[in-house]
Image 1: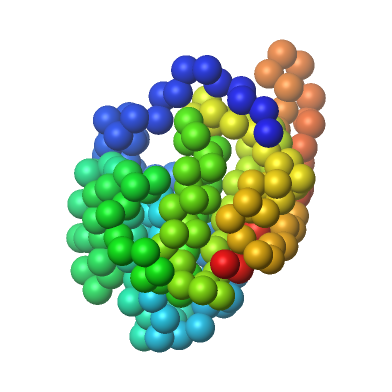
Image 2: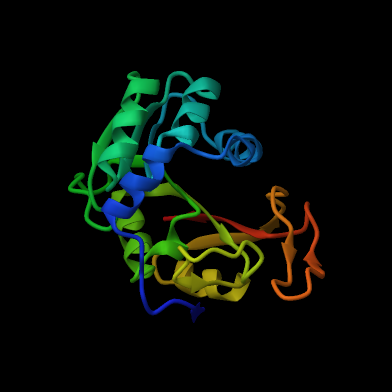
Length: 211
């Protein structure tokens, strides 16, 4: 993995301000398909936590498709959690650092985290906490941009498939890493405008791991 930003702008104040502006509806629309794919890997009636839940879009999709699940969402943005609670009070949301959630160990059947690890100063702390929270044979699901295919000044790290495999093997007994096409972005050279990656390309890494 490659550290691409020495100055990490991802503070809770930054994200409070970002969420207060509202989400891009086009991104929400494209993310919904990815979230539905994640939800279809979850057995109804189980305990689920989303680490870095933002305003709760993934939690809402899981609850809609798996209505008997107990769904928790954790984020350190007060504004994000306020909006999440307002949208869907049937889920359980908490303001907390996702690397030190305060939940008891072995509490969840599923831990999910989407487009979060690349924002963290110490990415492996997310994997450690996910493993701690999962019961034996529990499932962790992770998505993150593939290399620079979804560029953002918010990203601290870039990952390829072997990077994700390497950090998963430290905390999980089995894991699978796949390409995923988020499909909502195209990348062009800033100077020339030349198309580098078209919309619909394989821009995302999707990983599943078992404790």
